Length: 68
Image (spheres, rainbow, N blue to C red):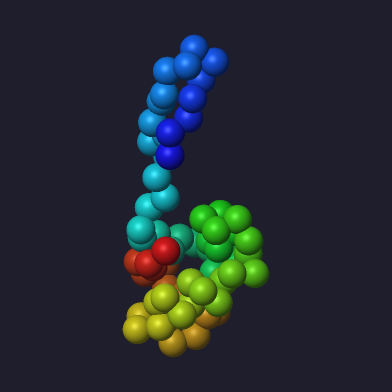
């Protein structure tokens, strides 16, 4: 993404979304979806992307690496 400032010079936005996230104590798929997707209701997308690793959306161990 390029942002143009009032000076007319373009500046590159370096805030790139990460591709993985390590599950931490107190996390939930809802909270992670809200943080990275802007909508907690998209928790099912996270669950589907990580179906090979996750067996149940409420039984995720701390330290599990999730694909975003």
